[in-house]
Image (cartoon, rainbow over all chains, first blue to last red; front, top):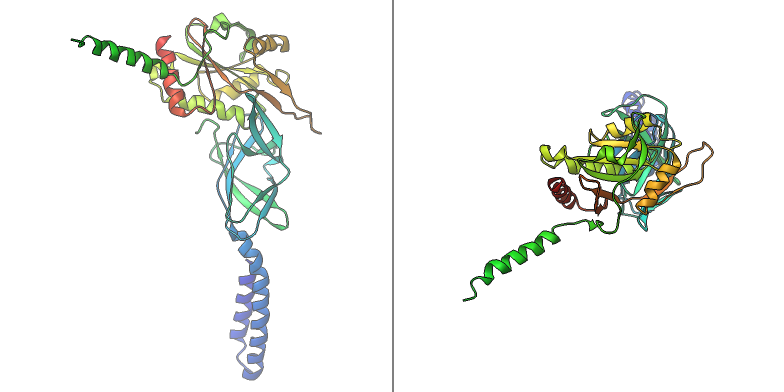
Length: 171
Length: 192
């Protein structure tokens, strides 16, 4: 986002600078090159962000201070593998990545430290599988609210995602 | 000459279909009738006899379970919503806590209310809960506590179905397709 802002402001200052043509022209070229380089630098981050498509983000709220579950679909539309390392939200003191599974008729839950999502792959956090477990609610929440959750990645900018608060009975 | 055979063959065929129509596992021989002494979500001591007269589904879990238990209960709630209203009232779901130290009657009530009026939370002394899990060969196990004292509980995920008299009938699974669940629950409720 900073990339386009920077080049826009530099263009505006060039347009205002009309007194000395020869000087302003050179300056404009230099500034243009600088803006281009900066835009490229910023856009490499920006492209990465756009390569991650996060949809269907929902927080399934349980009553009282019971832990809530977060679900979403993450599609990596980029060319490189991304590594999801966790999540955080100001609405809860803790958020952990978990995997539910069934073994010999027993439901169990295991902690997950990180998850790799290859190029063009989709990772689903869905009931009965991967989920975010949110604990110790920090603010009142009710069905229909929206909360900000930041998904964290290894070597990549964190992604803010809006989660819709839903009832566990709404399936 | 063999015309009489046709209805007989059709009848036999229907009988075969009828039996195959069940999607869940028959546990009528394998499991004993419903029996327990627990505490209901209003804090009252209750016995299995208090829940006779309805098709009863039994499910073990705990309220601090963010994913599996709400998913199973939500699926049962969705399945019962698809059943005709008059039959729906013939079904009750007993959610028995395997985590009584955290699951007080108050928490159980808050929790089951989310899923609908037919969901009833039961908790109690650990020995009494163990008596129920042992009776239905169900198990549970506590995970290690983290720094904040939180812990997970792994538990049997099956759903046990009983008839109006408390006799064991079917074993259902959360992973059963919705249509199968609705069909079996409808049939159980009809048979009483």
